[in-house]
Image 1 (cartoon, rainbow, N blue to C red):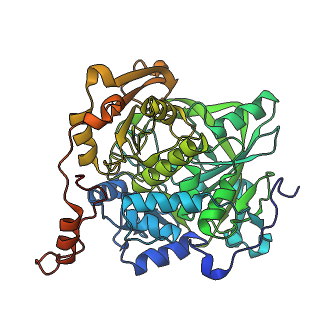
Image 2 (cartoon, rainbow, N blue to C red; image 1 turned 180 degrees about the horizontal axis):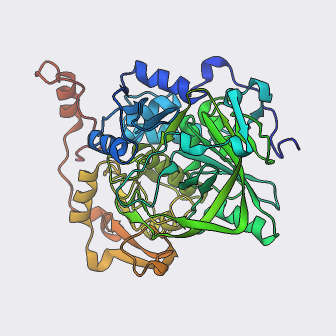
Length: 508
């Protein structure tokens, strides 16, 4: 088998610079020590009961990760769910950041470390923990793994919600890492649904156009960094593996598969290798999705013919529950990372004055609404920010509501944003619409379903009018000297914790 195309060795940084955990088990030790993991030892049914427990527990934003180890069915392995969920603390722990940082602080720090690139490295197959057990052919039986059915209306059990799927562009050799839903069809058959325009689907179609099957490798039970990066939008030539290495603080370790010419994560819990043959499809879906609705109708979708299975002993399957916030796996982490990516996109386009970005997780897990804070510097600045924030690579998919606010409004504070909408936006003058934009087949507001890949976006100017900035009424703000005096006396006055932080004050 060929060596990895484009994957070079990279020196690891000093140990004290490493931020993340190298594998899922290391991360679990970290979050358990922080009181962020709950082990459930009672027998649980995989048919809706496991996900019902997770959904009910995760109605609180501070709900812990849940790991299940006993099931009423005869299966082998464990299930980890609510891996990150709505927890900013677990997100911070995954990246080695300070768990006490504010949302704004986490976004700023994410931008800083996401800008670093460290290429992956190859390790010998014999040294890869994922190769504790390697099965091929008829020895493979994925139905023996603890694969859950999440919702009553789901089309089946889904092994792939918390996954990292590797595909390769047959023309350039570029390896893509994505997260795609995958329904279990049988012992050696797994569905793979991708939304239109996603790189995994484009790679598959490119192989099919050559009359060849598409090779694929899928990792389940992965360090959360690889899951987080795979769910983000990067340019077609960006390497998610390099980004993951930068976030981890050392190279992602990959090893050889035994069937397809793709690398596999050496420290994953479970990996399948297989082929997606041209035209081979089976009925798939629907699945309860991040929108809080069932996504799609039952329809033929491509199928992975599984040729090899790698796994650790007593493997841990990562199951990502898709639901309304806060009980959705793509909650806090996705909002923070998407916000950082949009901010990066705007700055790379040369837009000055950006003071903050937040893709609110309650709006369909950060996909539905983005708020950008800016310091206005010239006529048309707000309109420029709105148009580019709506269509930059990190935000173009699905985003419906793009809101611009002044730099005295915190984009992460929904109360502040609603105040700006109510006092600085005149709907007749300050809302524009973009039509025929990139959307998703999962958007239930669009009907009939065949219309759904196309959508629209509202660009909302909730800033003070630039031409009247000097005359715009002054908002009620504290005098800075009085604020500092009260902050110093906060505990003396009988309040617990730290005083609220304000950055804008009364101007004489």
